Every structure is written in C-alpha cells, then in structure tokens.
Image (cartoon, rainbow, N blue to C red; front, side, top):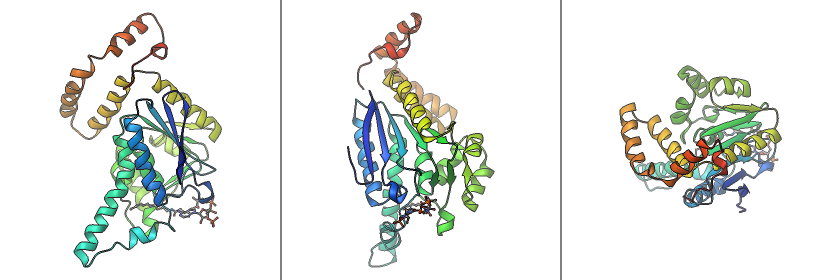
Length: 276
Ligand SMILES: CCC/C=C/C=C/C(=O)SCCNC(=O)CCNC(=O)[C@H](O)C(C)(C)COP(=O)(O)OP(=O)(O)OC[C@H]1O[C@@H](n2cnc3c(N)ncnc32)[C@H](O)[C@@H]1OP(=O)(O)O
C-alpha cells in the first residue's frame, strides 16, 4: 500500500513492513505522515493476516522528526476567537498528534522498529511507543525538542523513563538535547541489538518478526497487552489483569497444539494457528 509519506507491504507471512518514505526530506514527519500512521495501525490492529509489524525508514536516516516546514502553521497558529478557544483547539491538536504514537503502543501486534542514522525529536517519540528497538552502528538518537523551544509533548517524556533505567540519563538527554550514539543506546537499554549496517539490521528485524509471527497469536498478543498493562500498574493490579485475561485465553486450542509440538521437540513455527 502506497501512502504519501510511508508505504507498507508484507515481506513474509503475517509480517507487515511499514517504511517511512520521504528520504529526500530525511523522512521528516509531515501532515500526511501523522494521519497515515493512524490509518495504518487502525487497519493492522484489525487485520487477522498481520501478526507483527516492522517499522523502518527509507534512505540514510530513520527520521529528522517533525517536518518543520509543513507543520509550523498547524502547530503554532491554532484558531480560536479568544484565549480559551485557542487553547482548547491547541489541546485538541496536541492530543491528535499524541494518538499517532499511542496507537502503535495500543496495537496488540508487536512492533519492531529498525533505526539507521539520525532519529531526532518525533523519532524518539515514535520508537519509544514500539516494543522492540534495533539500530545500526551509525545510529544516533536526539530528544531535540528543547533546542526548538518546546517540551516534547507526544510521548518521549512519558515513555523514555520507562524504557531506560536511569532517570538521570533521561533527564540529561531531554534537558540538553545531546546526541546519544548506538553503543550508549544499547548500554542504556534503549535498543536491544546493534547491527553493523542497515541491510543486516533489516534482515535481523525481519528474522525476528518471523520468529514472533510463527508463534501463537493468542500468546503473542496477550504477552504484549499484559507487558504494557503491568508497566503502568502495580504488581497486584497486573496479576489481577493477567488472571482475568487468561481465564479465557488459556482455553485456546493453541495451548494444546503448542504443548504437543514442544513434547515432540518441534518448533512452534511448524504449527498452523487459526487467525486472530
Ligand atoms: C504536536 C506535534 C509535536 C511534535 C514535536 C516534534 C518535535 C521534533 O521532532 S523536534 C526535531 C526537529 N527536527 C530537527 O530539528 C532536525 C533537522 N534536520 C537535521 O538536523 C538534519 O536534516 C539531519 C541530521 C536529520 C540529516 O542531515 P542531512 O545532512 O542528511 O540532511 P539535510 O541536508 O539537513 O536535509 C535534507 C533535506 O531534508 C530537509 N529536512 C531535514 N530535516 C527536516 C525537518 N525536520 N523538517 C523539514 N525538512 C527537513 C532539509 O531541509 C533538506 O531539504 P532540501 O533543502 O529541500 O534538500
């Protein structure tokens, strides 16, 4: 499927690959991008033929963040007859842009993101809403917003502290806008794997996606949903939610099929699971 700022295709069974696709503008996030991501992930969440998503960027750079040319009028000049109405409209606009990344986190299908080169501003908002982050050795990450005069408002300040263990490091990155390179990103836990180049990274991302897609979608989606729930709740609340979730999901035929394969020392990838 071709969009204006991105494109999506199915490189393998049950795997959807979304590519940010404005390499000439370093995949800067224009109005079309913010809209298309919502359309894309709304479809993916409902699509039984998709079990896992890979997100990457075309060209040398993952993304330059918000498109500073295309977005300025919308973000900086909200309409309204007085301050209350203008502020209300501004609030609506910010909430709309937050949804572009929150919908990725809410999508029950796991999302693997692959970053090469720069990942700036809105790029960090995007990747922190994904489930698994991979990068190339030349990747760098920058919470750039303070440099352009604003507090990051579409997810980084809320999600990055839950991704990186060190609160001090998060504060430093967000307050100074310094670049963090691949090795530090790995050491801090922002990414789980670093690849020598983009080709190796995409091959690694698709292999990982294939591993996930080959497992029971009931198990995989239940795992994602419960990991995110438990991140935002106490252990007791998380256990309660889990028990309620699995009181129905444990009754899936996938458990018997998977357990039988395991006893026969077969990979779960040899099993045909019903669509979910
Ligand atoms: C309510 C919404 C809230 C969202 C907030 C989000 C905030 C942010 O994202 S803050 C961060 C904003 N981004 C930046 O400040 C980055 C600016 N770009 C760069 O630093 C460099 O382009 C980069 C390091 C990413 C890549 O450098 P490179 O040398 O490879 O490319 P350039 O020659 O600089 O750029 C090539 C063409 O792309 C255009 N471009 C790059 N970034 C942006 C951008 N953010 N917005 C619009 N256009 C961008 C650049 O103008 C060049 O275009 P052209 O001159 O026509 O070739």
